[in-house]
Image (tube, rainbow, N blue to C red; front, side):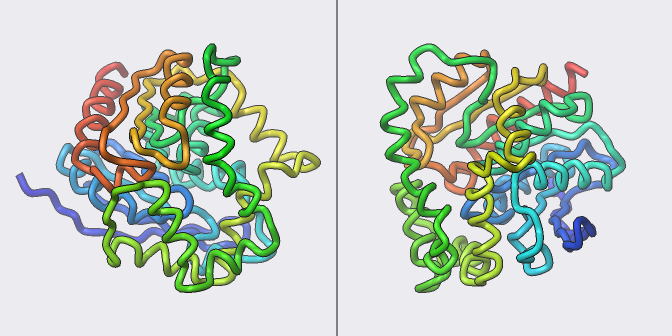
Length: 300
């Protein structure tokens, strides 16, 4: 069977910004929202999208605010609560059907927040490269925290005032290095990296992307406190799948496993790939996601 992979670009006005999303598949099909992370774009899902459409779903892959010229502004908010509100607004624009949430990296955090805020709006939750958080301390997690602290050493760098220039210089050489370190062994092509390079060689978009990290620790801001409270709240009663690459150089696979087991969710680790597992092994990722989506649809 051949599926129509015609891409439609949708736009939406919010907070003085023009937000953009890529849409595929028939409008009457069950919707799947694919949320990208850092440093990445919706093109990270290019190998997964046709497989989801082939399986009978429509796909909406929004650009996170700040990752397009029309959504990058020095006067706008770039925190995960604002991004979560954007994604909720995209779901409303589709007609508010119960939607499957699939998030990678920052997108996984956004998906978690949304699933806890209003679980009735969502059909299922899938997290890539980020484990489920909340519901108390997972036994055994302390063993893996020192390793995670080392892997997360880039976060203070992203909070520095120099970080936008660091990201942009040398045709996004620092970002290219993150891709290589976080997904060792992935021989990504120039075509695969090009959409991300276009974002991070733009000074305003690079600045906006770093604000996500600054907002994590601005505890005097209400949005920062709301994010922390939501992240640590018990998980939503949604069918949840957590996927990790065994060679992830950003988020410890062991810590991901411990937290997924503590949350009692379905989880799997993919060998021979790292942090960007959906771009590295899209067929393997789709083989795990599609049955999860179908089971969640049947359950409702």
